[in-house]
Image 1: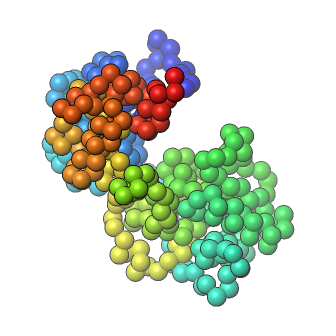
Image 2: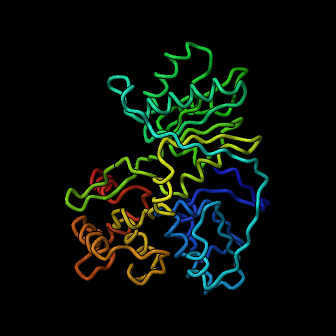
Image 3: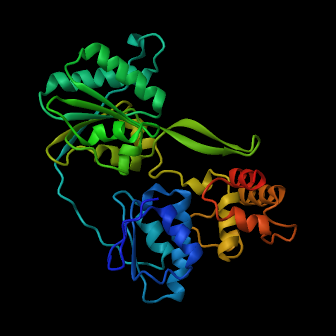
Length: 348
């Protein structure tokens, strides 16, 4: 990883995974006087695990200040989890965003395309015709959908605009194209990485099919599977918020308003849909005790906890008394899935 800090550095910016790694070497986080945990609404395993660790740490360090920030957080849930912590609302400077609901019309789809890619391309064309200024951000669930949408737009626009894809497998140079807008209008087609993790400049319009690729653990197959699922209202609002930052914006939602209103208010936390072997292993290595007594914001499913213990036993990470083995101690040092860390140890 890249470390740009120096001895005199006053502020350190890092990923949640790096802070968890620091917890293993320094459980008291004695180097820090204050910790700001941003984008807490994402509710990843790392974030939920960090929240629990920090809650325990606050009992032992009354000098430590913790600030949890998000634009679309479940405020009552988080405030209650931290003993009625005070809530401060800071309103940013935003411009009005016109939300338009535009359900897909499937009869005009091109052969081999998903209904939402065709509908997104049509919505983009409508926006480009309606206004001569401002770039467009289109959300898609995955790489294949992004490529399909880009091909549709490039074929129909014939070089009049720049079509820029954005997804995890792109090289660093290709991803940097997003942050270096040229003289022509652009359409950026991205996964939900553009929802909160980064800000794409010059965006005035958003096209949102209301879908995301979500990882869920399959107990029967003992592996994670990716499903395309409807997003929550909070995620839809995050996407809408990508425009309206520099001028009035427009957000096309490619579904009915009633569909939006019937969706869950917040995204299902990852701890409720993931394998827990890695979480249990990390807790054992940090000496944090039993997983069912750990102060998670949302307690994990009891069956998932049981399956996590069983997987660690099969991998030799724990013994029958649920004590960490020497192999498990070494596995906990690897920032990868428990099956991969066990394979790496066995391959030496």
